Picture 1 (cartoon, one colour):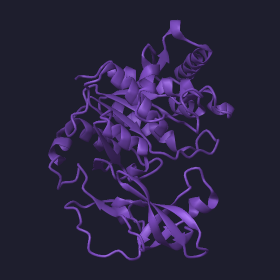
Picture 2 (tube, one colour):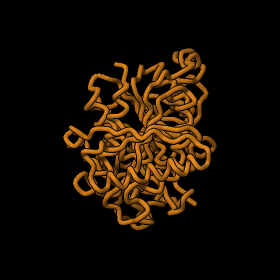
Picture 3 (cartoon, helix red, strand yellow):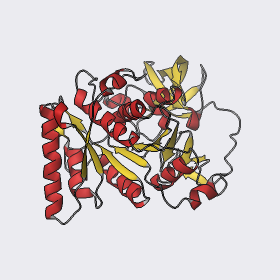
Picture 4 (cartoon, helix red, strand yellow):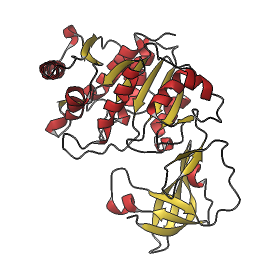
Length: 368
């Protein structure tokens, strides 16, 4: 159920591409709350407008909350022009919307995407957390500063691309050439119906040299081996392999997480690498002379996973020793503050380093 409340816009709080955040007075008790409005859905309400709000996260005090979400502007005026194509996202929900997808028959890119047969070894880095996107880009840029890196935002977590201020900043600074919102996600520089069509569009439309595939903010986990949103990284890695890409997994690791299941190589990465993948993929590991204790632990986890796969008759993953030289500075030079579960670079360095290693690994085969 949605906790629906009404309120009146007091003033604008702040904004970033695709989002306007407002101060709103709730009709129920007059309290002043922050409300987030997605321009793709409801536009920018003005002071005095009455709004219908979703206050679920606000009332539950969730970490992704702190804001109500604008469902509708009750004082909105005028008609909205619909796209030429027929692609619908957030389908069969009250918020469903028409988008111009690159793979829609009405798109000028349709034929080029349809004609693409093979990704010809293009590096595709798949990560389980949104916090990995910036570090992957940092590692990639450190080794291939002129190459084009495209981000595919999946529908495994936050659907609106605009929710990520980090993404907006990375695009503004040129670390990402473009963002494609795939599946039910929306609001990127371009839209695609599926992850495979997003990969094809990245290559055929945006001339990508490499691609990051990752969810938006708001990873959901249950503490079970099967119940977490980013288990879908297996599907993305399968798609990359099937389309002839060089598939790289940016592992989820930590040296500071209070939960034992995420220390070292997270059980999220372990279950995907050991049980969910049919083909083998590449995973980065710190070169032996530079290894710390946690790096030895992660290398040991890779070896254990490969033994288990071998026993089942599956291909072993390719563990690629990768130099960490220059990556710490590349991480510190990012135009965003890297953070995972509230921990920054100095609190959980390994978490960001391994994402940067995956980016550096992808850059080793960039064509540009």
